[in-house]
Structure formats: C-alpha cells, structure tokens
Image (cartoon, rainbow, N blue to C red):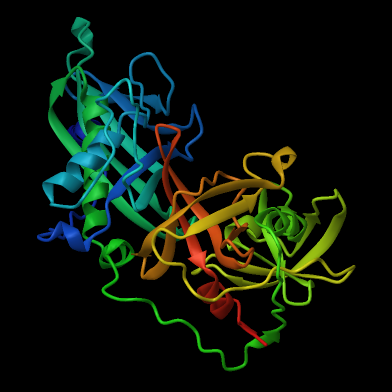
Length: 418
C-alpha cells in the first residue's frame, strides 16, 4: 500500500502542467475615445537572456520527465517576443482605447506618428510548463501553461520623457495539445498582461487628456534676469547674433542645443537634452568649449537652466508674447550632428496648441534631433519659444513641430525678467 501511494504521488506530480496563474482584472472600457490620447506600442523586449531556463517540457501520457525549455533557444520549443505588438493593439481596440500603429502596410512600415503616448513592454520574468503527450509516437504537439511579469514604460513624445512605469502579470493555460501551443501561450499571457494594464487607474491617469492647462508656477521667489532689447537693422544681422548666442549642449551620450539669456551666464535648453548630467559642455559657434553646471531642471515642462562661470555669452532678447497664427519665425540649432551647428530654418506659426496640459507653439519651422533646446525667434531676433519636438512619419518631416512658449519656460525655470 505504501509503495502504491508513493507511485501515485509520482504520477500526480508528473501530470502537473499548470504554473501559478495571474489574477485577471476588469479592463477599463473607454466610451469616449476623445478623452484619451492616441497610444502606440513601440517595442516588446525582454531582460531574459538567451538560453535562460524558463520552464520544462514533459513527455508521455503522464507528462513525466523534465527537459529544459530555454528562452530563444532549443529545437523543440522556441519562445520569443517579436510577434506581440499586434496583441497589444488588439487588446486596446477591444476595450475602446484609441490606438495607432499597424504592421499591415509593408511599404510604410510601422507608423506611430499619430500617437501622443508611446508604450514599451519588457518581459522581466517568465515560467512555463509544457507537455507533449504523444511524443512516444513522434508527435511533438504540446499543451501546458505559462506565467509572465511585464514592466511597461510610458513615454510622452511631446515632452520627450518617460512619464511612468507600471508592472503587470499575465498567464494562460491550454489543455488541448497543438503544434503552436508555445506561441499561443506567449500571446495569451501577454494579452492578459495588457488587459491588466488597461485595468490600472494609474495608466488611465497617464494617458487621459487634461481638461485644462496645468497651473504655471508663480513668479514669487523667481530669480530676476536682465532682458536688454537688441535693435538689429536687418534680419541678417539678427540671425548672425542669434547664431553667436546659440550653443551646442554636449553630454556624455548625446547633444542638443541651447541659448544664452540674461547677462549671458544662463543658458536655457530642454531637460531631456541634459538628462541626469550635472556638468555639461557648451560649444560656441566659434568652437570654444565651456563647462556648464545644470542648476535647474523641470522635467515636467522639459526645461533646464545651465549656468556658466568662465565667461559671459552674448544673450538673446526675450519676447514673452506668443506670436499669432501666420507670424514668421526662425529656428536655430544643431540638427543631427554638431557639424551642422548654427543651422537656421524658417516657417510660420500654425497656432497655439494644448498638449499634455501645456501650451505649445506649433510651427512648420523644421527641427530634427539635435535642435532640441534651441531658440525659436521672431522677425526681430527675439526668443519666443524653445524647440522641443519635431514629428515625423516614415522618417520624413511633416511640418508639425512643437515649441515651448518662452514665458512658460521662464516660469518653470523659476526665472523672471528684470
């Protein structure tokens, strides 16, 4: 009797093909898509290293044995995350969430230019048990179960910053053996993880449209800076002066643009340009390299202030008024590479837009990566905005670029004009 019980326990334990399943939450259904920003997923990656054991493959009618299942490795089971983008899209569509991006157009590629929120997923842990009950007959169709942990990163293209991270779990179980069970388990588990993301009030809060403008900081306690008016005789003279006031902001990993204001000891730029750096290099039009200290950062408004002690840079005059629609404007910066420093583009103001609860100047003055933090000038050579985001579709400019109004930038930088 004793041996019978032990044998029974071995059979029972061998038959188990179920990993612990995740709790399935009730996804929030969106009844009015206009109140939620269009969302797109850009990447599904994994921190699981190739060859890591993520489960077991059992064989025979009793699902015995314990052959290892490895991530992105093995000749019987292959697990990878490349095909999960469409799963994300489908889950959002089912629940009424506005989603953009499609993998169906092979000519245009995966276009996410219409998204106001970008999401990336990272699989941080995965466990699976598979069983091939007919393996003794040469049939490797499997059944089984899976569980995964997913970290979601939520990014704002307008602010060019990560605005939140959320962790969810997903799982699935398939009781009928099939030839694509490993993929189905991966897709269904990821689908549950997406569903649980859509059930998160925190995620909804990150992607909901603001019903009004976010309150601008008061000027109480703000540092006073000079704002001397420059009277240029020609537009050419104004552009020449603007180039001398605009610098390349160089960090260990990238570069952007910035410009001098006040008495020339302050440089304004974007917070995403300086990142987490405390010390940056500033390269003038003449090639002089200065050391700058990041003294103020407002990540929510994408503003940073850099102070310079070595010398005073020629400062630009600030015009706190927002130009009207149709007004001519100029953007100065270092697009793409430092060798293009001092590049000037022109356009008109398309209008004042509200994105992410903030006001933005929209213009068709062309900007590219590297322009970020550079000045937007009116026809008198005065700063009216700061270059922040240039939208593209299929890698091409579409004339839709956003600039932070200079008055907002100063308020969030805790600076006010003398």
